[in-house]
Length: 313
Image 1 (cartoon, rainbow, N blue to C red):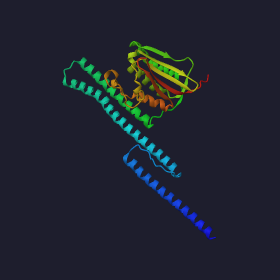
Image 2 (image 1 turned 90 degrees about the horizontal axis):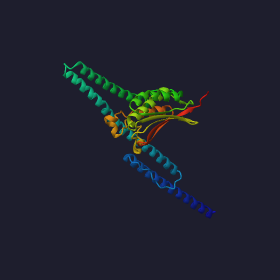
Image 3 (image 1 turned 45 degrees about the horizontal axis):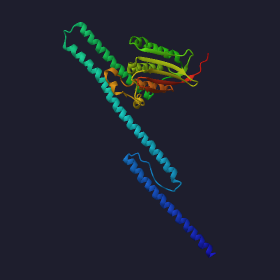
Image 4 (image 1 turned 90 degrees about the vertical axis):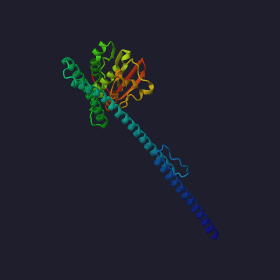
């Protein structure tokens, strides 16, 4: 009996000792976690929580803490990127508004300083003032449209749209201008009706922006085209040109707010940098995607993809 009690006491003592060691080890791990987390948070670093432990209860907790850290670090990086983008956008907005307004003020000052100015000359200057004022107004409207799109304040109801008609109408709107300038115009629209889930007004805006972009930035190739095609699930619209294209390094950024290549800031390539951003947002709210593939002086293609709707004859 005494031996049995002695063995029992030894076993209980061993269990208590093991539990005490485990308790101290867990306390030590928790303290280490606390210190490391505090260092990561206070330092704003992108480190992960590295704690080596055999405690099976702590391992999943550590994994989830690292997932949370990674998520927060990604959000912080996105916020920083957005902040930098906003600063650049404000800078570019200031530049794009300041330039035409400076010209307007210059013309008005010229008119005011010369009360005896010839009527025809005054008319020409006032016409230029009007054109520049419209340029500023158009730019402000683009800013407003993008703000409404990104805030969700501009509802875009979806319905069945006839892509053949929409593509033909938008390409033909530029046809006379292009042919007068000596451009080769290629329009490939199938006879078979292709229907998509979308919004006609939004697609008009998207295609108008893409075709205008092809003319403005791909003019050196003297060719602009539109191809409508489809498969069992989707409808695709390719708007292309054979201009200088976009280097692979910049292709992922062309849809960013106010992003413009260096030469797009000069007069020959002047633009607000919002046309493609607005096009991308409008495609996305229709449940579609837009991508670019560019090989300089061979072909630069912007492809819009929308969900196809089966045509009922």
